[in-house]
Length: 135
Image 1 (tube, one colour):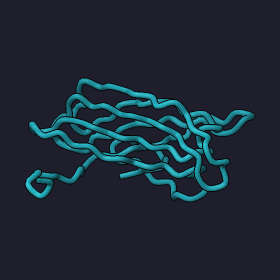
Image 2 (image 1 turned 45 degrees about the vertical axis):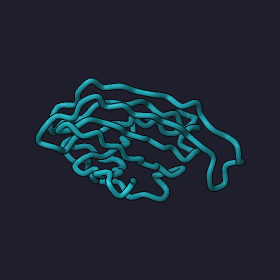
Image 3 (image 1 turned 60 degrees about the horizontal axis):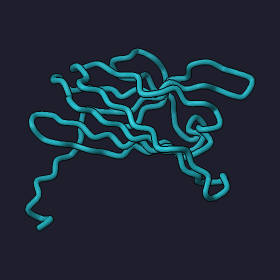
């Protein structure tokens, strides 16, 4: 039964969006997964999908992209992808699955469309750069 399944909350992990450069089309963003744990995480799989939401016409979406990292060291980060301005107009979902201490974790992080208009910029933990932080 579902009640018999041991579920654990994902902690000490986040997604960071760092502004990369400004182009005539808009701002480019670099996306990172940040491991705040004092131990490594292994077999990290990140599924990324952009979907319409808000004022974007219904039915617009990106292909699902998958990224794999065999291990992310303790208190470090890994670059996931660079995001174009037109993709930032969509709601972007980062579904992260990973193994930690012989348990499989997963969590969905949703970045709303045009996040710099709705979210505050923060000093990203460990990275020392200013950007958007989703925990």
